Image (tube, rainbow, N blue to C red; front, side, top):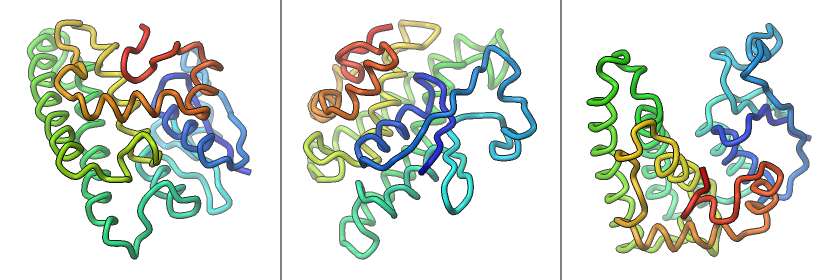
Length: 220
């Protein structure tokens, strides 16, 4: 059995939804960031930076959202197999999301971190503009290629990763005018609209009180 170290609506969300979708046994170890829970030596031993998610596995603990999702996909599916022609396209977009879209979303949500409070407003504006270009690129790919590994009918680890980030950048920027909506991405919106109705997503959403349309019209 896996153990997921988790905080609601943090990056552990897409890992939990993936585990639910895969139907593999796991349990949840909540991490309370309002206390010193994340500073416990035993947690820092498996999460050097005190962050979630961390997934404890028979191969040892794994931190980093992208690493966890790829590891799970290699063992339980929800991604093109390494020997298939689709793997190359899947990997380049997966790494783009992990290396570019995810950090960009964090800058939008915490614009004070790169250069302090005085620069936060301008950092937020730039982050929003960058994210819009990135969402446009994903939208163009979905429209042109309609890949099975990014569709609402065939859930993938990448689909749930993107869905979580889209939820955040629509709902939680400290400067609401910089939120990035799905108005510019109708094809991607259709994918996420299907994903948010899946039983795996509904189980997690209901357990955490996240509402109904958690990816397309997330409640704040």
